[in-house]
Length: 317
Length: 317
Image (cartoon, rainbow over all chains, first blue to last red; front, top):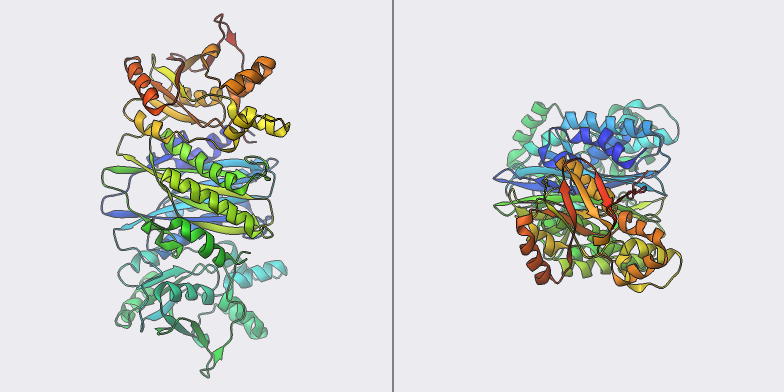
């Protein structure tokens, strides 16, 4: 394999249809921003043994990498535009692996209307790792942020919580829980929801490191507190089944990573609009609590007792 | 060390003064592009043992990482705006290492007027690696590209060639060549030159993988050929001294990596303007050949004989 053949054969086709990529022949891409819009830019990196196991289908690794970045765009209400990709691979990586990886990107590019605009392909003496910088557009001044939550806002989450963390546990224990494992391997970036929340939500983020920790980020950014109700947290059927057998697995719901659901706060007056939106998107949007004075996240059980959440979420280092 | 403490203590200060970074509290940055401008975006990754040795001062690793990206912006004539940083570090990396790394970024941010706008900090089971996505601005439609070279254009390079490759050889052989080693450790992105070449150069790129290979990229992108003259290639005094002792070291000039000089083509009519520009910037701009019909890069010696360049430049894989 040769670096330039690799780019020509596998990566150039991913930029086709996106003129700003200059067919990947230049040092950089030239990005025009539509008038009235601004750019939303996010960057995530993933590393073998940490964000992915390594023996997955390479197409799935690629799709998850792209989707975790798309999830950040969704959190700000942005529409995907293009992405830049850094690929760090051991020199002995088989060409078939790369072919599979690129096939995954290609599939998801079509699904999410995004194009490769540039990047870097390097060999490494270490393990596989990747980084994507994703660009999206949003109407000027309208982007959703973490900092806008207000006392009295209702706190919502999309979808169900904890599935991905339970899926990873199942994978590691070699237990068959295909629905949960799929949630771990292939998250769903909530792009349509994010774009619909523009002008509706006061604050929004995606849950990537665990509900309690991530809600804490909204609290700090907004200078407020939050109360959520354990009983209100939306669980999938397979997750509920596992948790009923082993109460310790509630940890996966409170602080499991990789949910990639949107966590957002909405003024009370808009709760019917959220109900209608949920029906229109065919996506559960569940009220899990409310924004309060103070500065911490409180989790209450059915009896109104405050639960102590020791491990609040995933952290590197 | 804790991921969020790390971000608060070390990375947030690097975003100060750049509002679009949202103080690094959000999922993404919101980038406004000045009216009449477009964005130039480039992404480069570096990995321990390949792009840096590993035992360097971490400040130097950081500065080189930033500078190789700035060099790509320079090649398109762009003015630096901001950058996104992915940091992949083994979990046992000492805090002092990170402190040094961030100090290097901070120094170069001031020198090159660029800010941190976002990124990701992850632990890895592998070696250190990093990726930067750098953004710059250029007046709409004016960016320099590789594809504009025309038959009859004069080919120029800035500065001197081969110093960095010779510096790396000296480092590896533990020979003292401080001037050359410095060129390897700390390249100079030619930002002022790139911006001045807007409207003057027909094609431009930075030499990162070796002169002959990189000039080949201009030939392919522009659909032309190029002839360059060995005797015309600009060498520094210490490089000339080493090469006179060992003629094989010419390879470092033809195909050594990490020059980060600009390689550009200019219509003949503008050669006096280039002379004036060289004086104004106090930077040698040397005529090394001309653009021809055909499609290959020819290197001629003093006698007009075509030299065979076996190893044309650095490639991964």
